[in-house]
Amino acid sequence: MCFRNAVGFFEKGHSYLQTADFVARGVEAGNLKLNFDDPVDFLYAHSLELMLKGCLLLDDPAANPNEYGHDTLRLFDEVLSRKFGGKILGAACENLRNNWKSHLRKARDIYALKFDVDETALSELGIASNAEIGEALPSLRKQVSWIAERNRASGGKFRYPVNENYRRQIVDAFGIRMDVVRSSISWGCADIYHGFRRLCSEGDHE
Image (cartoon, rainbow, N blue to C red; front, side, top):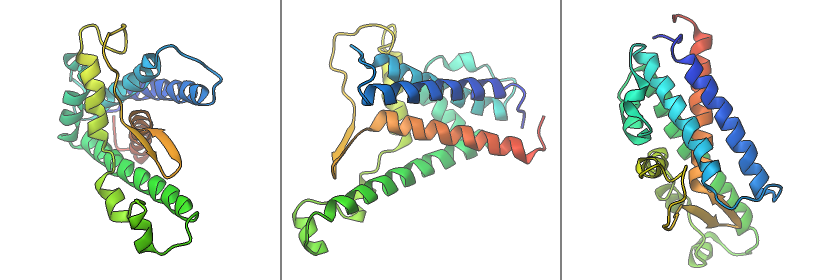
């Protein structure tokens, strides 16, 4: 395992993540108004790309990250097949599911308190059970695929105006409304970065 070539990718990716989160919070709070969402998505997409390339270099310091271009899905699948990068990414994927599960169940429980009825009646009111929430949890790979599709477009849909619908998955339930792509990539990249830092602290590396 070699950290020398990978560290710059992780640290710059983390800087992009911090910037993306800061800008996204500004937009959500109404402190920043944008005519297009693409710049925020681009920051998240580039953070992900840099961190995945860092994961690749952990296992193969001689690898050429430029070979993958902006194809984050191909890069994602390649990293999952590697020893150290795959361990970091696999843990991030699992943690993402747990984050969504915890977040949605908590929101559901708070929302359900408005109704003074038993669990069976809650189901009849359309309030999802734990099992139903579990079946619908977003996956990190699906959000990476969404990003890769837009990066593959001519010129990149994040970079240039494209005349087509810009569809994205939104969680709108239990009194909350969350952008699935941004939340997933934010949580996922944070976990990837923390996984890398944990490996750094363990030593036994170049």
